[in-house]
Amino acid sequence: MDLAERRGVETDVYQPAEDSGLLAAEAESRVDADDRVLEVGTGSGYVAERVAEETGASVLASDLNPHACRQAHERGLEVVRADLTTPFPESAFDVVLFNPPYLPVDELAERDDWMEIALSGGETGREVIEAFLDDVGRVLTPEGRIFLLVSSLTGVDEVVDRAADAGFSVAALRDESYPFETLTVLKLVR
Image 1: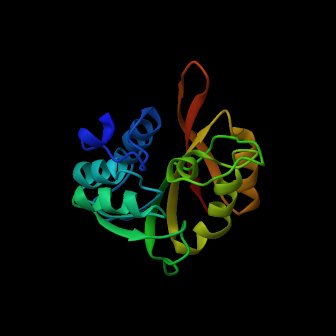
Image 2: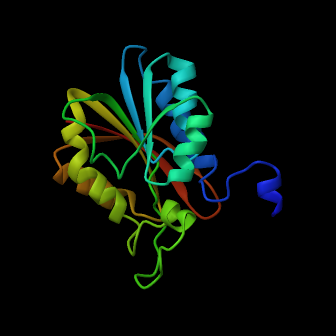
Image 3: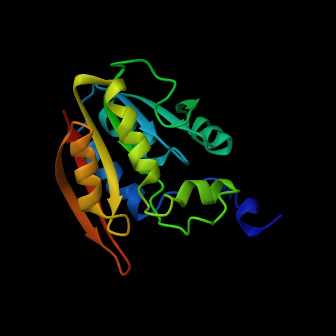
């Protein structure tokens, strides 16, 4: 057993970092108590938990990773194992939150463990984001909004253009710069 396991940290689950804190802070200031919220790719459940606690909104967490689902459930969250928004019905949510896998990786790199899946956005860093944008509009109410975290490593302008192609208006809410990247929270609406 390694040190992380001895401390109770799930090594197969993305744990809160700067990006998580940034998304949570923006979401909790913009979500209302009567909103139905979905967090896609919840990882540890940190963002979903903060939003639920700070706003009183009904929050559903989802992740493809069964270890993440278990950890989020242990935080007291309602959790569904899901690939992006695939299993959810039309117009089910007022708000969708997503801190996607966004690191660009070599196209030949294997995605053979849960942490690689949690971090890898494909060759451009946008592959998971693009798949998300293709379907997320279906699960939003007509007045619904999306809070999407994007990294400069992924190409914020390219994500904004892709979101526009998917029928969304986009506003950058907040940027935070770090030594190797700038993180931006985008708000998408129809």
